[in-house]
Amino acid sequence: MKNKVLMVCLALILVALPLFGACKAAPAEAIELSYSNFFPPTHFHSILAEEWAKEIEARTNGQVKITYYPASSLLAKDQVYGGVVEGIADIGMSCLIYTAGRFPASELVDLPHAYPNGWVATKVANDFYNEFKPAEFDDAHMLYFHAHGPGVVFTTEKPVRVLEDFKGLVIRATGAGVKIMEALGATGYGAGQPETSELLSKGVVDGTYAPREVLKGWKQGDVVKYVTGCYDVGNTTDMFVVMNKDKWDSLPGNIKEIFTEVSQEWIEKHAKVWDYYDKAAVDYFLGLGEGREMIELSPEEMARWVEAAKVVIDEYLAELTAKGLPAADYQEYLLERVAYWSAKAPTAEESAAWVETELEPLVPAQ
Image (tube, rainbow, N blue to C red):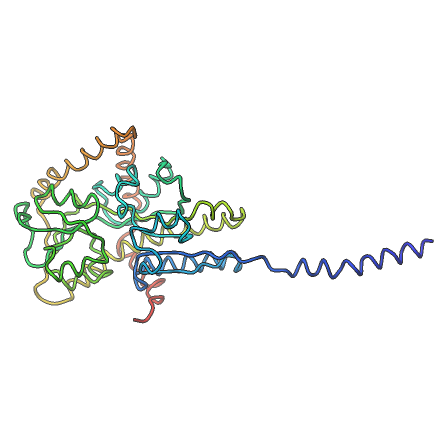
């Protein structure tokens, strides 16, 4: 009897072994995602986005596969957030201001807060979201933010040395930048970076208000002659990396942890890229030949610009308060975070050295 029982048990084990083996060998079904970005493929923020996708795939052992679409090849820059919410793309990177009015609380980040560089602006943008978690993002899952260094004024023909020089000029900007230019005496013209070089070269606008990085990153140094460093009134542009909420909710917990970990690491990388571009862009601009000039305002003239631009911030704070949002708390927090991160910022040379070592070898051949 005992032998019969043993024989039956052995037979059951032999039958079950192939089933266990099959279960063990069956690979997990791949999670396929799409990622839309408006930056051109050779731009370092595009390269970072693609490397982010590769890092996610590597850390999930290939369980997540992300197809990357740079240069607005899947969604236009102003359609990214809505397209991600609707599921046209699973992940997207773009600027909040390209859908002006949709993110009223976070658009305050864009206004001048004496950001000394993009590293600080990036750290502050992420802190602001984590501190207040604005309801305007409830229809998606936010992965992280990054933001450029202070905007300056570029012009093609007429240098801007004092406020009075803005008279008669049409200056391209985005969002709050348009209002800042108008407060300084120019005519504002709203347009995104992809269109700017053409607008400048065709004379549709006389100049642009943007971070120095676009001199090289978007090749705008090729079409402008003067750069006026109005850093104290320089705004930033808050940029997001967002994921479709339903897609996020469907991910296993361990995969979510990987997305969060990699995203946190990439904040620092984007921050250094912004600093690198500001430094490299000035070198690029001045290296283009004679006739190009960097203009630095005197302290007295800068004070005039700050006073003229102050109305833009005051008006926006009043608008937020009227909407029932804690505008005063937002503003106080932003100024405190700028001071905090400014004391910890790396030098431009340190950021540039990292980019040159880690990212320049990854630039695709043109």
